[in-house]
Amino acid sequence: MSPVRGADIACLEGESAYDVRWPWKDGALRPGLTCVFRLKNEAHNLPWVLPPMLEAVQHVVIVDNLSDDGTPEVAQRVAEECGAGERITVTSYPFQVSRAGSEHLATRPDSVHSLTHFYNWSFSHVRTAYSMKWDGDMVLTREGVSILRDLSWQLEDSNAIVAVPRHPLSVESDQVAWLDLGFRFLEPWIYPMGPEFTFVKAFEWEVREFPESTTRIVAPEGLCVELKWLDRDEFAHWSDMDFDTSRAPRKRREWQVYSALRDGLGHEVPGLHRIESPPGVHVVDHVTRTWLPRAERPLVRRKGRLEV
Image (spheres, helix red, strand yellow):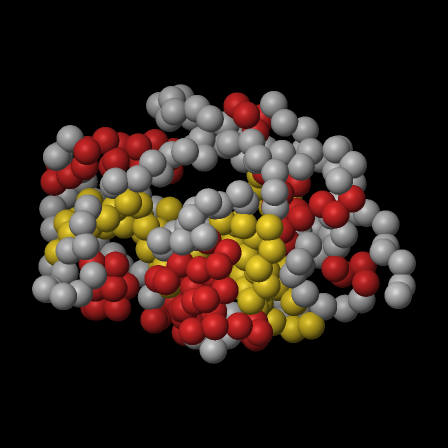
């Protein structure tokens, strides 16, 4: 057996299994797109999240971080049910990771407790030329599946990055949810693999570097919803809750929407749309399979309901 190559980023704590070793150092990466999920207690979301993603990309990497709800087992089961068991890698990261905000800022980037090191280690499992960061609460529409499937080969050798708009969907019940079209949630999610595209520490969270000359592609709206369950703590990964002074305007918007819905004032938030699904259809399925595909483009951002 050949010896293990030395670490490219050695972790502060000396846990050699969690040193970062970049795959491109071992030879050329094969064409294609790998989606990387970093998950903690996302078992409830995965039956919606994983099937469309397994259709869209060549491989999926699941990195579980101390889940206690069976997330890794659900991920493997869903992949097997989709006939994609051989295209998913499930692994674990057994360290408490500093929450975004002040905890992250106080943690060295080479510590196993740092978001920066956690992300670099997670993406070191990618063996394709392109990788995609994705969250365990983000659900692709059918249009999203089609576009990502096309991008997975169109991006080859382009060195472009791709930003994907996402639309937060606050789920009130199995039949009712609120879609936020009043704020543009847009950030790059798809990057080439290589030494110029690694994660570094920023003030409140990790960021992925890329050269200034990199071509930036913006995907169309309506490809993805981000599930927010009103009966769950959607802010547990933040160490600071004072979003009024945060450098994250999208978090201010999420807090505004959550607070309004908690107080029964959702109809007063501009751009927030109440959606009710037909009997027997879960509202997440209704929004991703029917409502969004039928919505007029560009998506309307105004107070009140958007009829489709």
